[in-house]
Length: 315
Image (cartoon, rainbow, N blue to C red; front, side):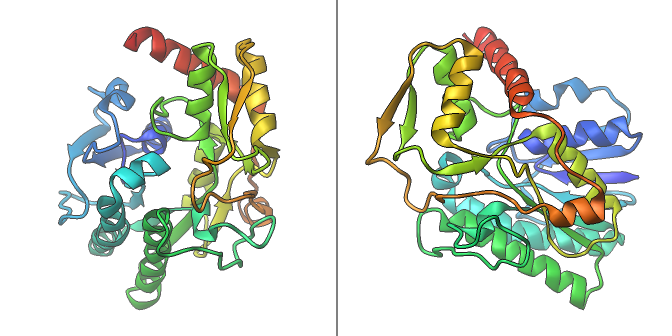
């Protein structure tokens, strides 16, 4: 296959580039590099089955030749990024999705949208299954990301129903692994960076809020299977093993040998930050034969080693 991956220089996009190249496909990575980094894909330079195009997908997308699939992963994805770039986040979810779907329609290509567990907002249903419509504040600070993804899902389904574009939607739950940015503001790089510097880990709120962390290799496997499946409705891909933030922080301190402990900033919980987050992956198990296989300890060891190296390289 010949595949376009928007956001291809980002954390998830670059891992998808690797997977499709490994499987023998040709990949075009497209990214405007607002949050993506060329170092995530520099190891693919010179590969005759890989091409990088710097482009903002909110503008018209031109790709010469045939395409078999378009994977739309372009978007700021961490709170620090989408709060810094709120308009760009809304535009890539709306205009970028429209342009990417238009390209898929033109090329008669399969389209896969990277959606998110954030479409469930601060959920009133636990765990979250695909039939849940969510509890989202459209005018809160996180609404720029949540509503952009909800609109992107609606646009994708409209193209499926009206234009008969062959579409897929993956709802991604908290994912971590190598190539995350140390400064991207999410809990995994925040905690690991503090631990490697020998600092106390900063916990916002009381630390009882929960998350379910999926290692990037597991996520990529689920996405790969979804693209090749016949499932046209949204599918949760994530790890249902749930930890509260205190447990997660203590695990990182243990794995890094950091004796500094935790420090709580109970009045600094981010507005709209969900209290619980855990995917119901029954559908992925049934339809894709998929479930995560990398333990939190093994995934964190690999991620810690990556950040340890990056700190040494970046000084």
